Image (tube, rainbow, N blue to C red; front, side, top):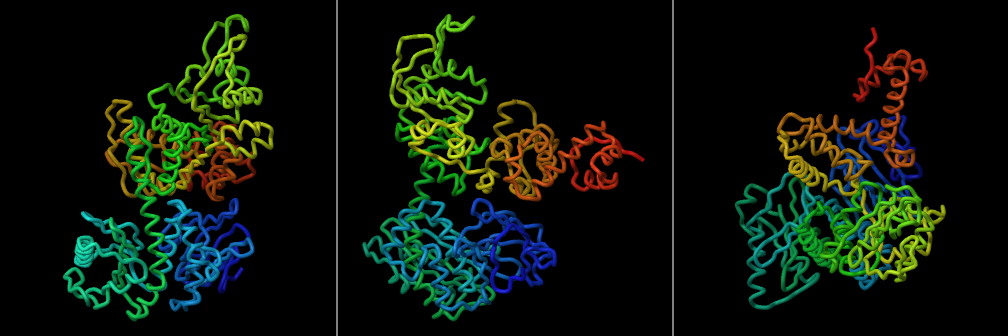
Length: 616
């Protein structure tokens, strides 16, 4: 398909300027095979294929990302906006830098549906009902679009408070240096305004915008053209003021045109900034409290902070909670956090994993049993009774027999329980948290999860993000696991940290085993690396070993990007053939209908961790 002005994304495929790609773009700055598009569950996933000039989403270079409607995608020298029309995703091309007002309004209205029909009240309702993730995505999208419209180098949102200034958002193309003189100018005006108790809001604030160094003589901008920086308040309260700080370096709009564009956007940006800062402050306060737990929850990404808000809200209630997420994302840790943040924090916390017991042993383990019920049984309490007055966490509910689910449903209804073989009823007062590794709707359809039981435990549903959805948390998690593993083992280990390339390698991997797999890889690095700084090659070797240990089932492989799934299959296939032939490459080649040279090439090119005999 030759994408002249737009690309209709109907299927998985490769974007590039080569002849063998599904989506061809004639752009000399594009690689032959530039990036890969995957359509998964109605979402668009993009992955850079090692292109020369990289792939940018909303002004940021990415290796892999999930795109959303309104995102700006830069491939080579071509810029696209992702739109959705009649249920189909379309990449629509920007034509040059000059965008007329009609296009500007259309682009800025994308996140609100029909921009021209949207009233201010409906936009306010949308913003007020959005969480931090949606607000952050919306803000970054709008700032990226404004950066393109204004042809500027950098855009910042800076919040001024009584004793500090905070960079809240930064869309920047290179290393930057803010003009401290400009920020001090607004800090002083904010202080004087508070002292005189004068308040103004909204688009009237545009009159307070200043150009630097034209209006403010500053050494930090010495030697640049007089309209290098424009700074204007976009939102004001008694506690703080938010500034829009714009810097031009290579080219700039005529000042009156720039002010005209910004005036049209100031109310919208101010509304979003106000709500976003509120949500971020709530998230940071919750994060601070959660960090005080005995076993802290590590992460600072928007997705993780949004999860923690849900955890905190759930902990403030006594309702049943259902945790849903893939194996290894940290459901046990989240359940523990809910308990220790709740009013029951000084009461028992008991955990039971259904997957660790045969189906016929689950009921006596949960409810208890009396002597003589079965041969050789003794009277003992079940875990439910041990959790009385506290919190009971039951993991892997998909492995719990339906008959036991019926009895647990009675517990949730408030009925008393009986030990197996006993007529005596026992009252319980417990907080119930259940966890599922699979989609509950699918389990209900398959008859493995009773619908009335699910309805009862799903009073509060918390879906945990994949590690691939919180890539920015990986450096902090890696250092935490490194230090934690040292303390637990009390041995002499050389590694003290990671090189920048090692961190990049950790962030570039797909992590099908999620946080649990990352922890295993860090422990392996700590054990095997004999130097202070872990390198990217160390990481690649440790991940290769993990891939051999982490035996994905077919369903999990289907969730991986094509190239990664193909490599995992190929490595296991070759390993199996060499195992069958006791390491003999020639015999493995015969079994697999490949040449001996082809197998050697795959072994050496991909550096598979497979033992084989070198044959002459």
